[in-house]
Amino acid sequence: MSGGDDERSGAGEPYVSRRAEPYGSRGANPYGDPAAGPGPAAGPDPDMGPVPDPDIDPGVDPDVDLHVPTRRAELAGGRAWPVFALLACGGALGAAGRYGLALLLPARAASFPWATFLTNALGCALIGVLLVLLTEGGRRGHPLLRPFLGTGVLGGFTTFSTYAVDVVGLLDEGAAGLALGYLAGTLLVALGAVWLGVTVTRRLVRRAARSRRATA
Amino acid sequence: MTWLLVIVGAAVGAPLRYATDRAVQVRHLTVFPWGTCAVNVLGCLVLGALVGAADAGAVSPAVRSLLGTGLCGAFTTYSTFSYETLRLCERGRNGLALANVLVSVLAGLGAAALGLISVRWLAG
Image (cartoon, rainbow over all chains, first blue to last red; front, top):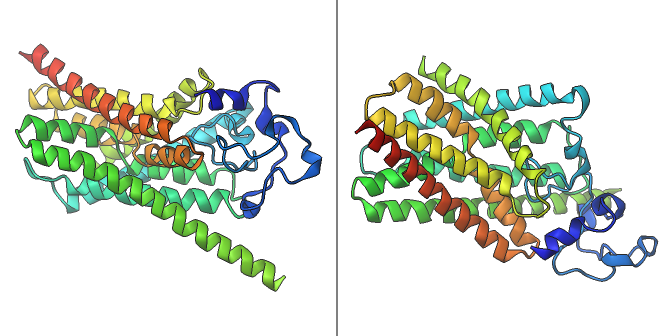
């Protein structure tokens, strides 16, 4: 926990004050820039990992990470309603997709909930792809793309509540093995899917950036 | 008709998730994603209660589609939960990542069971 607190203590807004290299040069020491000076960030900080560009850093919470200045300002002034309207549209689209998949793969009593399983696995892979595309390689998509596609569509598509209630339902029906398999299976596949989405997309984004530099 | 109910429920659920996440995130200073965790556990409690009520015949299939598939489905999220867990690992916070998985899953299951059982008990 302490590392997380350190990120915010002191200067008030250390994320803003810290000048960081964009993700494109992530491999380089982000503190190599002498203009950055010493200070608390001098030397590699094993707790922090690479220091990201504060404006496009996906943060930990891609929906609401108030370390990220653009996201802190998301609801400021008259900008709240367009964001809520986009989230409503995105969430409705995502939920319609989830419902469509549930109609294609109807659940039977005491059986593996394939529709919810596939929905969550697919949604996790896609959020990995999306957030790398939107935040890495020095790219900046439209500021409303992340809330619409990430928070809205994919958030509305995937579901945690149906997952938990289905596990409890399977336990209730006496299918303890199936419940445990579904519980662990979804968790492993979802985490694997988001890792795969992030890793593959990151590799492609870096390769594209390298070839852009080579041709430039 | 069911499509419409799901869409209307989700159009409320997704912005409500964002607002709830934000309300939680402004109240703490850690990197632990309490906002998403809170949203998911709360959604599990409500859906558990709703399924219990539907099983008892107290709630129509239409209301279940509107509030269950639509609202609770869009209110909770697996994609953000997974992504946050991965981000914590990428930042070297493996302990927090594991804690996020354990807290979200165990509290989510507990909340779903609590909702289901308490409504069943109330319905007699």
